Length: 280
Length: 237
Image (cartoon, rainbow over all chains, first blue to last red; front, side, top):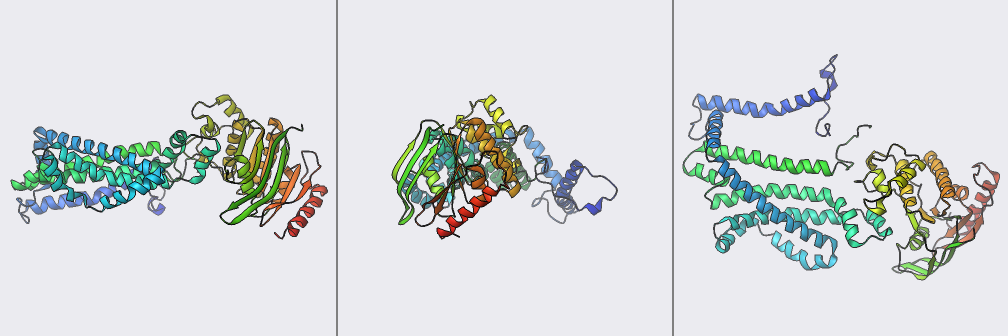
């Protein structure tokens, strides 16, 4: 588990000094911080000495202050509004996608009926739905949630179908040998075997959900992080825009982290997942 | 001892326009060990799959005595997300007989690996688990499709001895597909030499040697020569 992301360092650097894996891991993390910290420091200096006007690019410390101010006021309202929309839209889109993926994946008949339609719908850039959704559903919550659901649907659906169709026929045959019913076959073999692909789909569906959230909230919203973005632009407050961007990044990373954690937990059996086992 | 477990007569089995099996008759007695020996493509695996019920589209007649038949595939085919124990009890979902599984794990020499995942097993160990999974349903007949073809020669010999022990201990009959002449002769009471296009049984060799056998037994060498002659006459070597 702990070695999944660490790359071996060149051994010649630490001669005579034993390096444990945890200090090695921290060194890699520190290396990852070098570039962002350098950029922040550079920006701070450049803005403070006046090379860039602060109404265009606020100093990083100002952005931090803005985030603190927002956190004492309206930020939580915006975060909860956005989070609810994303979770709602993602839940609806991903659930529908899983149902259709299972249906199309398991039945040639369903594939023949449904797949051409989905292929056609998929070729519509999802943002093209925005005007129609606004016309049909108004500018309320429904249109936003539906747009996010559309965005989440296709990655989950596509990966789901591919995952089911990629299941090793030989494992399915074991179930047939035991005379498993279709339901038992699905629960005992097909679902676990398709799980890696399903997780890939869910994770990309979730990241698209955040993208469509911003699109929906930029167009019409009175609260939410997208609203914060457009509000910052209209009031010429780049610090607010940057604050909203940072919060979006943090939320996106956290929500993806939840799925990644689940993935790691459920898919620990994968031979490719941790590389070398403990016993080698 | 002379209870008939299996009686199959395949008049014809074809994939598209190609006839793979024609007029094959095979009987298996209780506790008997029979090998189907032949080259790739002679239909021996197909015959085994027909016996197992995995292949239903053929003309002919299949009679099986009541009682479980289990199948060990060429590859272990373990569910990678289940532990060794769960894989062995796979046919009973989560309510498998734990004591029986534990006994089987010991019998196949994997004590201590009950909670291991398949990814941490070697090829030979994985095949031991597959055999234990086959035995779990207490079959009277175990069907094996080239079960040791993917392991090295030394592991193969060990697994052959293990298989013989288990067959003896659990009083089960084995029907084994192989392309290894030595393996067929070392394990079996009868070796059925199959030929190609269409696949059918060209010769039956009786190995009248008691178990356990000595791999260096001159009688095995004599029978090997006979089997090779039969294979030669069948134009497969």
